[in-house]
Amino acid sequence: MIQSKLTFPSTEAEAKNKPKRLPTSDYYDPAEQQFIQLLATEDLDQKLAAGLLDASEFERAIAIAIEAAYKGTAEDNASHRFLQRVLYRINRLKLFWYDDLQHYTNERSLYLKTVRDEIEEAWQQWEAAQLDVAAYREMNVRQALIARVAADIDPPLSDDNLFFREQVTEVGYRRLVAIASLDGLVEASQLSRTLGGVGNEVHSVLTRLLIEEYGGSRLARKHSTYFTTMLEELDMQTEPEAYLDLVPWEVLAIVNHSFLLTERKRYFLRYIGGLLYGELTVPAAFRNYQVAGERLGLSDAAMSYWNLHIKVDELHGRWMLDDVALPLVDKYPNDAWELVFGYDQQRLLSNRAGAAVTQAVREAEITA
Image (cartoon, rainbow, N blue to C red):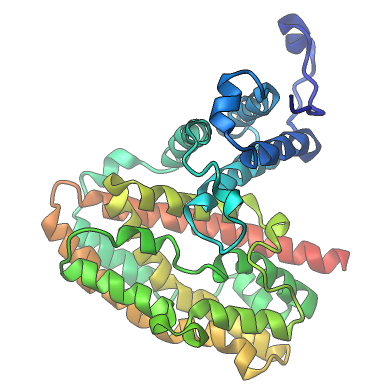
């Protein structure tokens, strides 16, 4: 039986009498370690069913975290972080990492699916509550998309933007790159999971987008290779997930949200709306990091990741609006509102993640 350091009140009455405190990372860390052991256990489902493994303490931590993160009134970063890390560890099994094949022994585990579904259900209800979902059904979708694109393509500089342009030091820049490496080294992987099925004009544009992200099948031109070059010049680790522990939960939420939408074909329109926002807004965001890198004296090769995206994603944003999103409005007139909902959700997730990254960068500079 797997042991855990988690301790709980022995009776319901004792639990009610305890002061209500938000759980801390110290509380969740043992549960996450138990979960990591479960992931690596051969025949996980069978052993759990036979009573050869005890996951009750991990499951109790999940229940407590869901209550604290999605049903409480206080901001509970520790609970959010624990849940998003658990989700990420499950979702990453959908990608192949060219590592030990035994790491995938539980990729189709019904138990892991149950854990994932339980978290996602509560999390997605919480996320949807941040927006007025009913209002989207009444929108003129075409006008709404065009207006949003016009507003977001070149927004005014914020205080956070100016911080990166004018103030961030090498310490802070390295923290930015460390966090960004989680996505930068496996870029566009979720998009690949939407491309199976019938070919058409929309499908062809998405395929072309993926091929460009993957460098036309040439590793030297794959976008993740440019990110690796930047890491190498900064003398940082280039292995995927090397800096996972530095990644704020808000960033993990974007990754997990993308996994969810690409795995559920019913959510395809929401995914496309989010992808439109992402491709559209990358150039403006990356210009701030480009200016920071130039000020810090990085080479042209190290800057190529930012430079490339500033150039190509302007084109990708136009593709996504004119050749993907607007044609889908015509094809799915009754459901097209989900494109705008997906766009706004991605904007909300991205703004939240951007603020968290900036905070992490500032903290790195303070503690350096």
